Image (cartoon, rainbow, N blue to C red; front, side, top):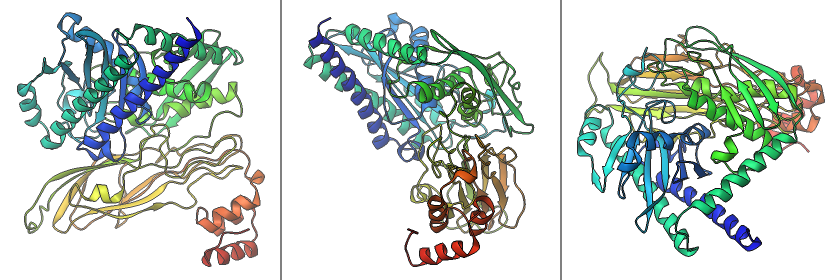
Length: 569
């Protein structure tokens, strides 16, 4: 291969990444669900004709993209190569052949150029409702969690499967929103296809074989080189989290070998009777993500850069649940996978990985309806409102944790204005939670306070999807733990961290989301950082005094300065 051709292939590789990013941005612009257009809970990718992922969009969440890396092979197997035709669009929400639960719709479109099948585009989006019990942990099997769409043709040679559309509309609570999202998914694949064809015409490509070989060969070798530079060894990681009605133990053994990193989840708790179980594809997605962030963050994600990370887990453990286990809230456990990986990796590569953070998203969904104990409002409506929220991330070896930032999912916190416009819900309070970040040389990120109610004349059910109520984030290298999650009605009545719960007319739900843990000994934190935290309201005067030894007089001076709108010098 000549130097010129290598340069050309590198340009094409960068172009493919920009193509799938445009694909993802098109999905954000055209989707109906706030979970997609506001939170970015989606993925987009391009694949070669064999079904190997060549590039993924920067926008999106690793739980979707890394899981979707395996999905196209399932589509090829189920549809059959002989049945793949120009103008087709395929669809599924199968948790084990898609991205882990029924609330994710995956759409795959074959890409043809001059009559020749050259590859695929795929995308995934989280939709607000798929029927069944609704988005929550209360189901005891996947059959209760909503409508299952096996891998099938949504569009056959340009003709939409109207029978499938009718079935979908008849089984979900927000039919216009869901069907609109499916068309948005299909459209964004079409946009990716057009840009791919433009690139192939520009570079005079008949197929993707050459660029595919270049991307996969170089990505695999670059990842192996990163792994080869690491010290050999093995270590175990463990984390205990809330679970649904009993604590869950996540256990992993990591082995750094010359040709890869092995992760074995043997010893992890068994499947739960409620919907917090995780298909292996989702466990693999977040295990690979955690390892890539630590070991090879600059290498783009594709089939070959993920291949050296090999993940195993015994069947019927909570991280390898098999059909028909309930899996609706698989993210609650799956988002804890990276911190468990880092508990082991810190023993092998000290000074590299962060302290524990909130982990799972602090999501909840409210089902709003006219009150049942009094007169209805004029023009009553019913609505499903899903909101994505985040606790704090863990402090890093050289930096504080990030406030109200989702790690590892990477999705964005939804704006209040976007949440309130889709139903009769009111967000009375949403602000950072002082003193929630763990103390340390580097402070953990702050969680949030949030208070939610309904319009006059409405009541609602809330599907709580929280963890860290009983097992808050743990500090690393002498850092302190983050604050736990709390949830209650505004009259003080305690509520559960998970499950569907009724909220009467006139009541509000008061929540405090968890903080990330600290890193390093608090005595090593610089006074300037302590005073800045106090001035910004990240910590209280009591915390500054008790946790960091700031004198009362100096704390008073800092607060006086901050009231004048100045930060301490």
